[in-house]
Image (cartoon, rainbow, N blue to C red; front, side):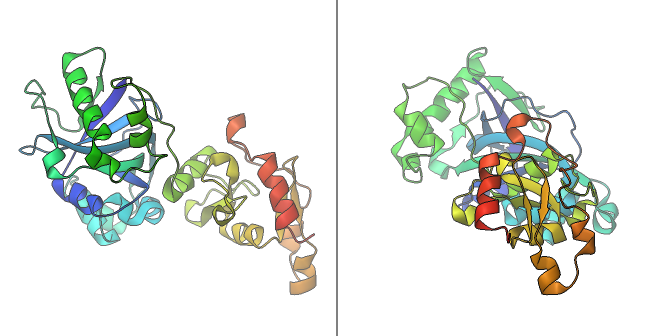
Length: 315
């Protein structure tokens, strides 16, 4: 089992440990375009900075992406580990030497998105083995089967995940509960459940940061739309998402625009009837989506599209 031990500060840990979030952003102050040493669903553990040499919790790796700071805050807000955008910028500036740029521009930062985070009380913290390299600054990838240190850490983590103290927060569907049912020591990946922030970021990336209908790529006006709303049991899944310009997102949610099972745009006559307008929108009638995700399993689900046409579209 490959897993990652990432180093963070006590303030970030303490802030998030008081919440009950379904996801967190283990942000990185600078760009790391090729970061991704563990597979999706692998454990990502939190180690505090020295002198607090303990593993104190973790989560399950979803994806590492690079986005402008403004979008990162908008997507995750307090799940970044700060109570305000200003404090978030301050946290980043302490690790960068370009505070003026952070305040006057919109620099890109790294986002390591983690699902189903867990935070242990101090009496449950796992001491780092003595052979841990003191020169480690950001963290390291480990393997429970290929190194003595990796095996030792993973064994202790498994004990904590299976303990009664951890079960107190674990739901029957949570990674901890699932793993506690397995034979002790059997490593397995957990399929991470996306939260709202991860959904927004991953849908944005899947559509190449362009509006599915128009190809617009001005990021501040692009929004991740659910095809079947989350309130109607539509999942935070890429194939239940569309990246749309904000006005098209509004029209889609209210049923003035739909997408058929051939990925063709449908524009309701209600726009003209109710608003005596809509010329720009009718130009997209029967147009096939300009932008689609590369992976077939990430493209819009025909089941969800059919639901939207039947339940929401104003035919």
